[in-house]
Length: 385
Image (tube, rainbow, N blue to C red; front, side, top):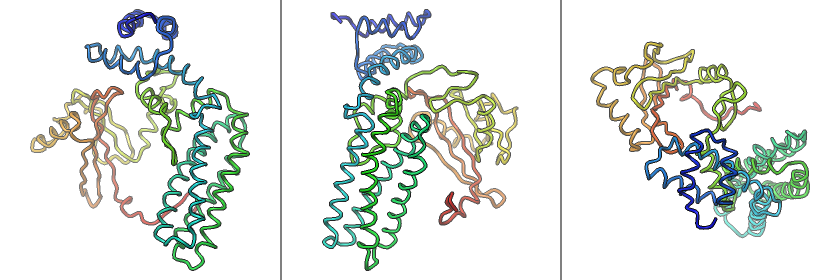
């Protein structure tokens, strides 16, 4: 490292990237001249470069190199089973906290009032639901990819039994034999699930999954959150990196999003299939796109594309339109919403600012929906029913 000015060095790498250097070659050069560098330090350097006038578009070039550097360091760290940040150890830490809470509840049976029991149950339920959902929605899919479907088919069902027992406990909190008939069976099932996870699910998962699988599981776990434990510090680096990393937009003939790939035709159809009307106005205030829903509320035709949005409204509405645009563009409001009664139907209209990963304003999304039938919904209609 020999006193190298990291910021100036990265400026030089940016120039080489602009001249055609590959991301992999840039990664090798950074590692050879600087060595491993903390992700947080790279973020600070990138921000300093932006402050000095280098455009975010240029910085985006380096984001790919940043991602490659980070991936290598991160995967070695997270995929080590002895690391406290390994997903299995995070699950186990949660189980330890859950066990502590179930033991406290058992000790307080007959001593605490109903309100205290209810509060403890609410807290326990909230954490367990997070724990189970992360297991079902993030860990299980990776096991399925290895041809191991047992947890999805069996353990998920047992998780739902615990959820049902929670519901029964809350519904019967004032029942005379509440502790014996509802609380104890719930706590026993929770403890039983901890045993199954620790002695069957986790050892099997460690045996079947690859280091790259654990890296992805860790990254995706940030979206579900954690139960009764502090999120690992690496979480925040991953979240920041995911917001800023740039990927090839087209891959294998498909549009490549961070959350999956779809063909252009699939993308067009799924946008048109949404039960809402979408209209996007770009940063220059011109209509750039609208979805083609079969139940569109307001008329939209191709003639509107490229039209100034201010010209899409009657003159008397112009001050309100301008205020909405300015509020969203300048971050004064996170959204604006309005609702109208049109021919006996309730129409809900929302406006959202669209920004890139650096917070730069890109335009405004209008979402229009007929919510007449939605307003009538009461009770529950579950998939199982």
